[in-house]
Length: 427
Image (cartoon, rainbow, N blue to C red):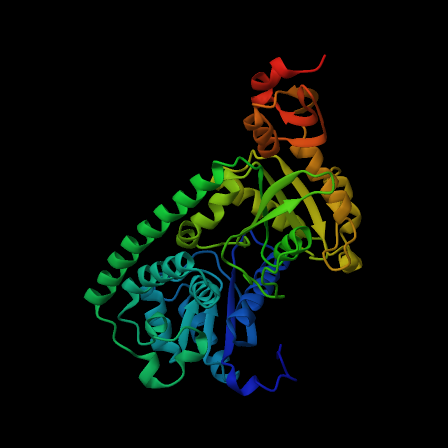
């Protein structure tokens, strides 16, 4: 399965052989889906997929993960394909990586390391850079004796593994431990600063929402279309890692803050979930979630399940949620699309490319935010402008007039401030 045959930069890309393990409880289609996702990850990392191999396996081998005979087959196939990298979809132990590299004389990495590499190249904010650095150091520490010290490179990216001088750097264990200690200290400082900013934001209690979903489903595009923001958008996995928060004003005047979060993916390494907890915290703190799904993807239902599973693990599974199927302009590519409406009767159908369905989504968001609010008419005395400010912050002023007695206001307000305003109700 040769890739990028028309790519002029083909010679600059390393060729990779992908290995997926098919356990007895997996069918061939599921294994092929795993390989397809790994292909997307490898493409995002910047390597070329030279070929792939699905290996049926009942029990993993402590030496090579796969059996000795299959390990020899992997080595022969990599040589035949002229692959410089062998990438396993499953996580390898440090010993298994070393043994496979000695057998194949190739650089052997796993899905975990691929994702680390992508994250390292995509992180932009100080916090994300520190988090990725910490995850990389902790991952590399037990692997320092590997012949191919992939994560010790000074310049990230798979291309840096070329050349013996770069690929076989000896990283001193004490230096790595010192780096881990320093990174943890720096992260504490950054997180304290983040808490301060969050407290400042909470002093003006505006409703908050978070966009969640599988990576590459169109979350950043939705943020852009709802807010007029310019969040980075690219048709690659993990195109954006850092949380981006923007203010949204709905057609009815309701204001709220909306955050784009890191995309979920099958088998996301646990240390990266922890490393990006600050990004994912926005889902826990949000008043509601918008779950974006790619309706054109053949595994859309599985992606729906995975996202819900991650949200449950984060403690955000019980949040009010709007489900939005994106890319309806491409929905004819999904043969299972007719069942989606039956499985998700309250979902929305949108296209961030054409704008279709965005108006309906905005209406549903407004309905959700106003669900527990009451419409009232109030007469606020001239000396109580603080109450008017509170209504602006926590509710929506629908109409405002003035007379000699003060401000006559028609507003939609949440129940939590109703008692403070009850004495000013116009009956």
